Image 1 (cartoon, rainbow, N blue to C red):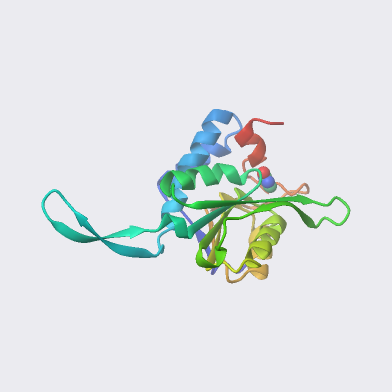
Image 2 (tube, rainbow, N blue to C red):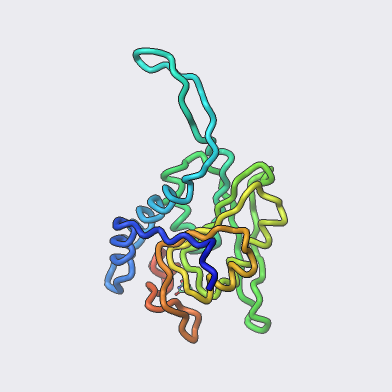
Length: 211
Ligand code: URA
């Protein structure tokens, strides 16, 4: 597996929260809260190279030049529906970011990802895009989402998940070697139903309390 473009955010706070989220007995409310907190910690690492500009400000004592990021240049793209959990954590850190959504389902006959929803902010060619989806499992929906977003020619693109399977990383990095991947952990493998092992179950069900 080529992991050159994969960053595992191996910070104690991230790993602690991930352990709590993995536990089967963690409630929906706690799972959702932990995902928000953990995503905000991932955002800290993912946004490390964000462009900044200088502004002149007045402190209570004098004038100074200081730096700001331009949140409007950032576009967070959530893959429906589980992406919204990571999205909320990122928006807590960069509230000015623009947001796009992409919806995909798997055709049961062809097993290909089929798009049913695509709504992006304008002028993506001037924005840095961060695609978010908690589970990089087979990688098929992530590959399809990023391929579709690339058609809009964003200035840059990154992919952020909570958990990745080695199979998903392989598929994704082969299809999009130019797109950096950020994750809190790389788990062992996929099971026969495409679930990550040991994983945390169905992320959407755990965020929304469905099932
Ligand atoms: N999607 C999930 O929600 N969980 C998995 O383990 C794999 C895909």
